[in-house]
Length: 394
Image (cartoon, rainbow, N blue to C red):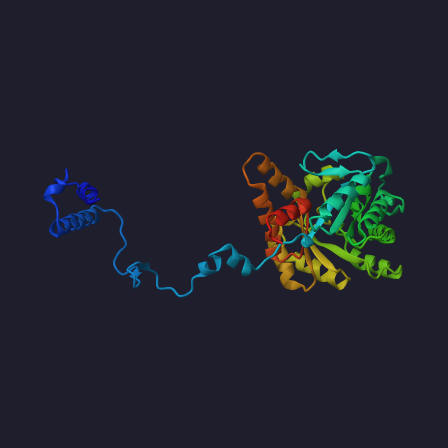
């Protein structure tokens, strides 16, 4: 051992070959080796190699480096148990609403632009909801693909009591009586023009559209919907829907208002799923400008005044700042929609091996909660709930 130390010391010092072990025995020789090492260190310092200047770091009673700082945030990260104990934000399946696409066909149709999602037959919709239920998902929202021959400018099929949505609601409530069934309120799935409202001379009519929406919410409430969700962005529709529901005796039916719904480029895959792309132009005259954040306060104040029970921001990830603004401005629950474009980008990156899908999806959903969302509409609902169960995070 001593001979190895001698050899290393001389090599470090650049002195050449170490002397024989026979000529370097005893304490004096050991002191000589220490002197060589010290000399080598001085030469190294003089050669320009970085070192810690005197006075930067203190030494503790054991002679080890010591930064004289009492507050050390890393103490609250030192183990998994401690991290879990002090965790500020919790994500659970109870926070999720699971969107389900439905159609009249007897078989399912995969949605190419949304890997893992499909248009369900009504029987498959029930089976999918039951499967998600076992992992703790309790809330669902249905979105219909309506056959073209049923689409009109005024969207009358939206309030057909025998239409696909009322039948889907009844089936879900029968299969899972304790579930929370939500229904989308807008004309675009039923519109021959592909817009959320009635079109006249190239314009979207606000008040005439609201009349149709009131019929739609009454139809959905009669079918058993627990939560109606106006996503159309017509001015005044929340108050009108609230009054229509109350007048019909549906005072317990909640309104989840799409409060800050932006005219976003992230909706493409969703429109593929419903075959509901605008027939002309865009939706910028009624959906919010992506450049505007403060405008969300106006919409939130109106929706709250008109009787909304929950305020939603859509899209989610690019609008975390808006979620935070609404969280700070209202005492109502805030929801975020993790929209199709966000979902599909993550799926595409995961398919190429660029991202760890499980880790990134859960981190994304957690970010909505951290920003202030109480509720998250996400196509990952079942999958994320399953991961949370498997990871023991519940």
